[in-house]
Image 1 (cartoon, rainbow, N blue to C red):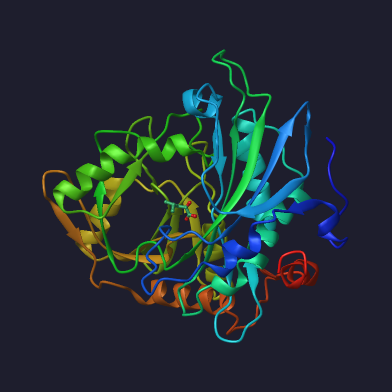
Image 2: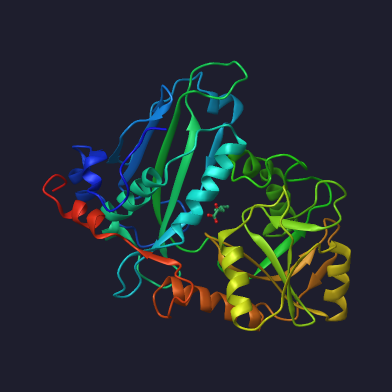
Length: 377
Ligand code: COI
């Protein structure tokens, strides 16, 4: 695979800058209300793969792309993505959370969908370059961030059932608030499955999210916020929410479903487990039977449930319920373990606490310099 010198060299030698960048940046302003993922920052990154190698990328003004109607992604959904964040709260220098984990997971998802691997340096050029040129638009209130969305998709125009030989890698960014602020009510989904055993459930693939939309619509009709998915074999054990991992506090221990080929290995999940263990909490990664958990909520053995993910951070769950309206309420809208983990994680991400795990990666100087260079302004 042909690509790029290591990070630390001048990024300017690896990708180009579109001539419209200065205007795109100058004409953008942050709206007062951000929401999640609805405002797009003015600069994006794109690199293409063809003839067996990655071509040099480009930082470009955010905007529509042209795609052939026969492109594989439009017919066979050959697409994978990541979610990650850059933070600049208070007077902290801009930093990204565990970007190497996103790169590894993107490549694991890509392998599952027969997309070519992305060199780490190209991935980092995309996420650091987009962060640097959009740095002025990173919202700085606690809980807000620049949400980065790297993605890979097959662009070859051909309806044959074979992996695309042409692929694009893009990074777009959205100045955002947290995805689901507040305490959530979850529908136990007993009628449908998010994914199949042996399928693509452990990959971060657009199709998994499309599959969740019908249940999401039923949640809205029945007065729930999100779906709680069960294993696809017997619908017996809890798996995950459509875009978050699930945790419960039972008899003072933290339980979370053991990863499988149908659960996405969340980077926030991994971080929460490490934070909890460092705090002295016992964390069990185990099968959690849904009916057992509902019983534990009724008897008070389960004191808290929460979900976590990059976009959502750590989000408390106030109740679980069935399609027939039976509801199982947790004792508090937000329990003490949930609050502790959310605060501990955010304090590291937003630079208020020491980072004993080495999770935060400051935006490297060479990308910052790029943003200040005459070539852009
Ligand atoms: C993320 O948390 O980054 C995700 O991709 C989940 C999505 C539903 C927003």
